[in-house]
Length: 160
Image (tube, rainbow, N blue to C red; front, top):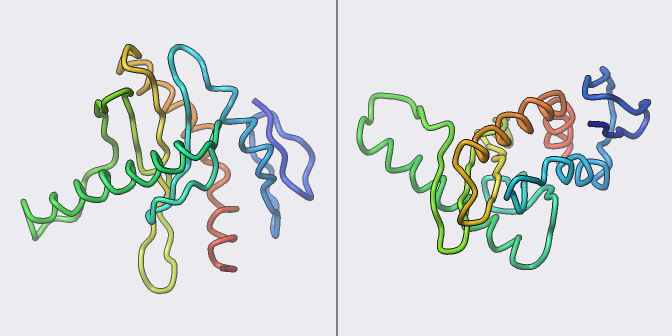
C-alpha cells in the first residue's frame, strides 16, 4: 500500500518522519480503497461528532452512515460508564448488524482538543453476508497501516 504526504516522498507503508506535513485526502481515500474486497463496501475514518474525515467511498448515504455509527459507538461508551462509574472506559472495538450491513468499529486514535479528549473511529462496513472475521481482520489491517498517520492528525487538530 502506498500513500502520499505533501512534502515527503511516497511511502510503501512505513511512514516517514515529517514535521509540518499535510496528508493528501485523495491519497488517503486511495489507500482505504485498496482494502475494499471480500464483501467490504466501505472503510471510513469518523470523528467523535460523526463527521467523515476520509472514506473509501463518500456518497450522501455514507455521511449519514458515519454519523449514525459514531452515535451508536458513543452511546455504548456512555452506557459503559453507568455500569461501573469508578472504572475508565474499556470499550475499544465493536461489531454489529444493521438492516443492510455488518459493521466493525474501533477507536483509531485519541487526542486532546480544547482541553477535552476527542476520538477518531475507524469503521469497516460490509454487506449482510460478510463474515465478522473478515470485517475484524480488515479493521486491524487498515488500523495498523494507518497508525503512522496519527502524528499528522494530531498536528492538524492542534492547528484547528
